[in-house]
Image (cartoon, rainbow, N blue to C red; front, side, top):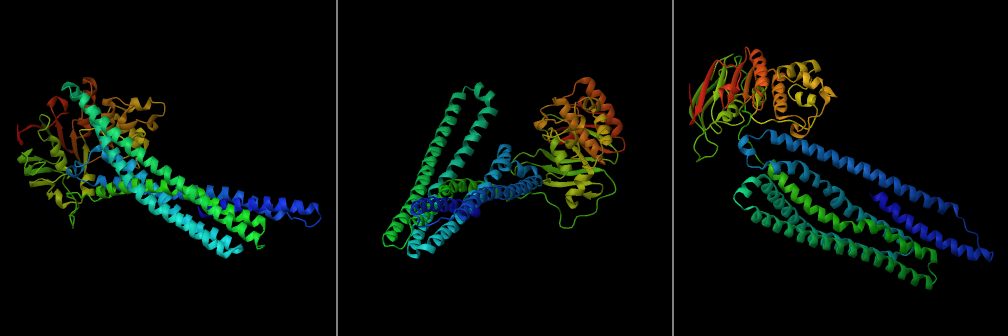
Length: 533
């Protein structure tokens, strides 16, 4: 960045000197007074021009590559931290907020170095270099020019900080509120229409939009004033050098061409100094994003590895002993003194209406949450005494929702087994009755499924998630609504395939109705926090 700035200033200064000196030399040469050597300064001008282009290219490649790598590492770290949070801690964040942190907020941090930290430092070094250049010809004038440029730098930095940082943070906050308002209106549109409150909610959203637009206008005005002040300051510095040079010329102490060199050199700082006000506007956005990311990273899970994890048990029986669980301290427990044992190799189905606690059983088994009281065991060992990685490697879990990445079929499957061969993928897809469908796709396993599986039907996406569980080949399987969204014929075929694949495994199946599950050894109903036959 500094090389680019100095090359630009050198190009301006040397070009002005060369043109002026050449003109003067031409007049004197006509009178046979002097000859003028053009090759050395001409070559230097070309070197500055090419050097500035190369330095700018190198700066863009190096700085942006470094910053983008850092942001990629940060995005990975933030996502990894989210995956370690328990369900209750995650529930404190809106899904839209989490997505905004992973995308917009992390992207906003690129301005921290590229626009807010590096340019002021480079501008200060550039001012010192310009002052040193002028000092070669006129030390006293260099001091005055340095004072003018340093004062301009200080005004732009301090003024930009005060005028840009806080308002840009307010703009970010306004944008966040407006985003939530719009999401609420879109997601709650049926209810707003039903209760006749859509116009009122839309007006509140419009008020937020107008407030954000006012903040944008104020910030844009300050930005424009900052750029105008930077340009005026650079022009003032150039005028100071010009006036001082003319005074020295009149006393016979300076050539005309050197006056032009000193007057044009400060203009090389114009681009960099003019970018400072905008950089501090971006800094406010980066600070606000950083605070939100830090707050999210500070969230601590209630579920963590025990200090000294016990070895994984040999058996795969799953037991819930007097388990009580409530999602909030004073809320009615969703499970109350519940006892359930799924013996090693047994298949147990639990059915019940929505909200009865079926998915809570699954979360307790994988220790995504801990019970308020009671014990959950895998084999003969309480799950809270086992390492989380080992526990979750032992249990395959088909969640009630369908979780797919915007990637290929193979990539979504290999989340379960990264090194799995294509044959293993097709075997898992066969159990989910998807093998023929995937083989018929133009790119087969490499076909993209779209965001959240948008290129698949609901049933196909569900079966792809099921195939991922199959590919993991776990000893304990928890299936939450495994046949949901499937037509009768497909559900029957998948159910038969699952019955064969589940043989010998410990299985806990959850659904609203018994007919939506493969065959089971026992069927229990969950209601009022308790189980019954």
